[in-house]
Image (cartoon, rainbow, N blue to C red):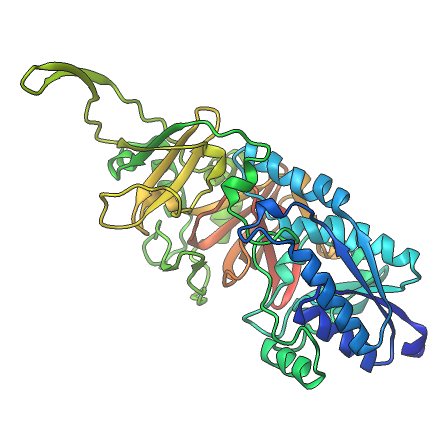
Length: 464
């Protein structure tokens, strides 16, 4: 094996404590290390504090590099970032989808544009401060690179790397993946690094903490529309909801407990950790479903509530006024500035009062510019059991383990960062990859990335 001193590693130094300690460890391990700071965003007007955050980050990063004793370089990738991440965000939100810019940033910038820049400077590898682990094993056709969850369960960031390829992984290093966050802080203090007490970054990768509607209004025009609350009666008479319930019930294994259609609530951004009680579904029954059945099973309930008006006379002068007739399925409860500015599961920013429990977005109808909402954490519109990933969007990190049409496997899945892994059945069909969860999931949203794991290893991902 080559001496570490002969291996040149570029550390993506952000000015944060994680990448700083990653750089420190690489230096201590004898690698030929240099730091590269990338600027990806110029517009401070979109951030909540209005400061040029990147300027402070660069200053801290440069001090860290000087303290460790490694060369420091700077590269401006803001044009690539705008084209490949921010423009993608705008396009997705305009379609009523909810993208994850951090996943895109890793795939398109850190391990593509940034990687190419580092290679031009002579790097053999690019290292980052991600909390995840990488293993390389012998495969039938050569080395196979595995992404494993970080050792710190509270900081595992493997989800953000779910779109990387074997080629990208072959040139990647994650020095702090087997360390817990408090230890990273301790090492930074011990080495007297300028970033030791720096708070973790928040918000959109390289943009910062933003007010999302304000940020999106750079390109998406506000357009007023109705906010419609959906009542429970809608589901009683809805044909598609009846299909979902009856189909899922038909898949239950003998002896399985009764079907649950509602997500167990823990907090606004999490679902309960999945404690395995065995798969509730019969695999033979699952395999017998047609592609068309799976397609219907993966589709959410759609809302089409019509409101009729009536005239009435009001006050002493009997002034003629118009109002909506009562509708058993729902009610117009407010106005919004544009359906594209909201996402499923959102409760903040709706400004709707007069309810005992919180109000949540359950669907955004972009063509008609309507937001549908429901009251309470247990509203039927918040929960779904099955999702679909189009064949063109299925990405396998482990190409040697990819599924073929007709295959069914058991994996653990998450649909958002920090969500506890959920037990699920993964079914590959000609018309897509389907994920059937053991328990219903809260806030499944088009545009999100679903990521599946086998134990600690992340195997693949896809856009819902």
